Amino acid sequence: MKRYGVDLSIEFCGVKFENPFILSAAPPSDEPDMVERAFEMGWAGAVLKTTSVEGTPVPLAYPMMSANAYGRERIIGLGNIDLISKYHIDEIEKRVSELKKKFPNKVVAASIMGAKKEDWQTLVKRLEDAGVDIIECSFSCPQGSMGEKPGAMLAQSISATEKVAGWVKEAAKRVPIVIKITPQVTDIVEVAKAVKRGGADAICASNTIPSLMGINVYNFVPIPEVNGKSTFSGYSGPAIKPITLRTIAAIAKEVDIPITGTGGPVTWWDAVEMMLVGATTVQFATAVMHYGYDIIDDLLDGVAFYMKDMKINSVKEIVGKALPNIVEHDELPRDKKVVSSLNEDLCIKCDRCYIACRDGGHQAIEVDKETRLPQIDEEKCVGCRLCVTVCPTSALEVVFKDK
Image (tube, rainbow, N blue to C red):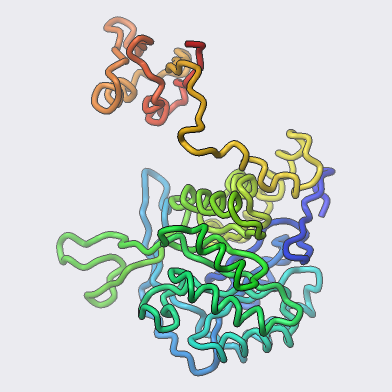
């Protein structure tokens, strides 16, 4: 896909995508008419919501959504107690076939989960026969670590991850296998290495984070309340993007395996960040649920204009470009002094920087009694950047000076 003269197409595991943006396995990809609408709007592909073999119980409970808000932003983080799709493989294989007939140039992927080897391999074979382009395996839902630890996620076990990835890859004859992992582990790199040892083609990094969304302090029931009870939610949305960036970067720096990124992107900037640390494609769910499928226009325009501005001709040039700048703490340069600097024209004299520095920093800011402008004592200032983070108008920045 060419947009404003730049090439947005990219290849992932040998599959051609017209742009890097796809729907992740979630409610926005759980109905065929919804996926068709997304394709017509410009999304390059979709991972159909996770399916299972016939007879697998899917005991959905309602209400299932909750969110954390801040200021006017209603969803900085979205919690859900949703499960896999209520549609089993018999329905999903039909949808895959129909979508590929209608949209041969779009990438139709499907997400699967099983309870035993036979289930995993049956799902792979049936989806391949239906014409699916990519199979994503959910190792990050609490279906159990194949008996190793009931109630845990499969990807929380190194041995089970390698074993089941091997089962799935063994059954696949032509379709790339992507393993979706969880960030809720001690060492994400070891999980990624297990995925590669198992023979899988790529990793999806990563998924929601198990969370407790809040408590009603008057009736003592967690949120969302389901007739007086609740459970842990999967936390998604922009609040978890920093965790996702770290997860992708850690894998990309240590394991030679393609990555599709998901977990928090909303804007084209978010997507570029994920690609800069190693993701080839970027999956969206919460952003679509909040703002709709038509965010694709902003994503495509934003990345295209960014590439033109940066003189980048192909989107694949973005992938991994920031990785050399991520180093261990003891490798950080320390040869310059860092101090805060104020742009007086932008300052609204709210005193937030003064309070933050006084009670959480180095007491390096005072307020001028006449002008009420912050005054920075460069002898005390160490450039911690706390004042910059609390300033509502970007009136402060840190500058580097020779020691």
